[in-house]
Length: 187
Image (cartoon, rainbow, N blue to C red; front, side):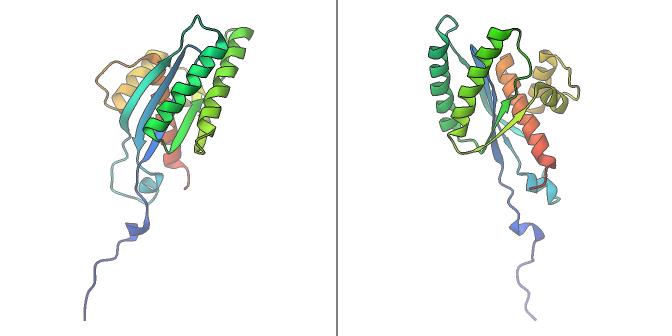
């Protein structure tokens, strides 16, 4: 009797990591964070691989505060499109707007989110949105955590040894929230 290669039940499961781009929209500072997270099938199929997201890159797009809004929005679109093209994410995550300090700020944030959404939508990739409460609860374990707590946990989870701007920390937290959420969603 002849024996062939052992059959593996995991041979048909895709364990390729997903590249997730988190975006924290802002009309002056727009943070972005890029992580690589194991495919959700690696967890759902019972893989012995450790589920640990990996930091790839982060930063913030700084827009000229004294320029008219339409100029800032144009720059935001151009710069964000370049970031998306450079890193080639598989999925994009954007923070939901939940409050603004005033009517003018809310309108400005609405315009900014619109530009971010259109730049992301034109890629044809899946776009996901989470509220700040969902992100904080996922990353810190407490939905009313302050920015310093979020920043500290992001650096701890992703083993980042260098300083992060609050905007890029928030964007990385968005990407981590999505990675955690999709880890438990069914494929």
